[in-house]
Length: 206
Image 1 (spheres, rainbow, N blue to C red):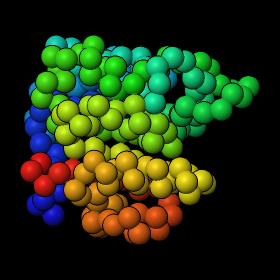
Image 2 (cartoon, one colour):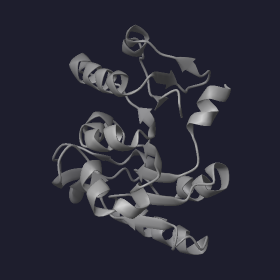
Image 3 (cartoon, rainbow, N blue to C red):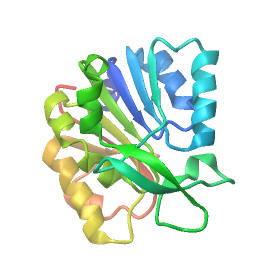
Image 4 (cartoon, helix red, strand yellow):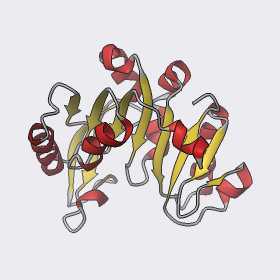
């Protein structure tokens, strides 16, 4: 679908949940982006992320930060998934949880104004913490109008899911289910999503 492909335009990328940097590297090849701000709170993943940035000689073009993103700044419990490094997540306090530093997208927008000046894409992979990330990004969404691509994991709470739905539809003309077959969503079809999928939100001019 040409319209959806055009939404992922060149510019700066904010990558939230960068893991070991797999997508970080491909942003430069596939999207020809100018700069990536990569956030990863997991200490082991972050170590591999920094190594991959160095391996591909991207140090001047990647700002990598050992941080998570949420609706507020501070510290939150974080559960590492030893069987699946991509499945680690901000979660409830448990015996397995560590505590990680978090920030908001809007605070990053103030701190890193230079790379944010041409922000075109926010890429989110946070295992169920999508709503909180976007709640902390409202000023940035309104100011920069970046395309948002997110892995969406529906919550058991329908109220939680509807808050995310409303936030996306309030800020963007188009919300696409980017699963096996890219499909434009309405509020009703968004509510019908059952399992994990990818979503793309963008304005027509993108």
